[in-house]
Length: 249
Image: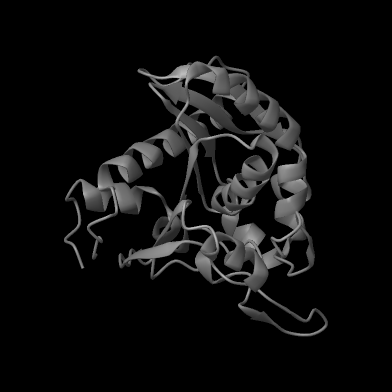
């Protein structure tokens, strides 16, 4: 796995661990159990999502801060293999200048965007200088939609960072170009070459839907073949690599 000199592996590992906490939070909420924000961070908000891809109202993520950094964290869906088999390619318009995005991801984000925006707005008074938006799997796609929405609505003097892990494609070429046109946004896409999820939706979708999708962020690729679709997609494969449990490729 090649890591560019400007890629901060320490930050990426921190974000991956926060996403792990989002999965723990989801399981606790599903079982009506208590959950505490990660040690060393100040909890700002938890947020739920409602859409077909997450079945019902489900705890999707949380917002925390540490020092001058704010973190918006999205988990993935617990049944990604089923979601991949049912994925549709329909697109809908996004905010002006940002093309079109996947309808399902849009619906998920729309169900929690007001909570996220108000929580982030309230936090900016605390001398926040950087906002990190991150997610795994379906959460990575939602994270990539969240960043331009926040940036266009906050008009704040902060630096935005996007780190996605094993994310499907979220929008069309114009959506990807929105990121390219703004070099002030740090954007990285971490993925396993043996994972099926980053291959959907198709880059060029077949009829009856006619459209294109394009990934967002500079790619950080690694190759770990476990023989399992679920394990190839797991965020643990990446954290294991950084912790030297797998040999680097």
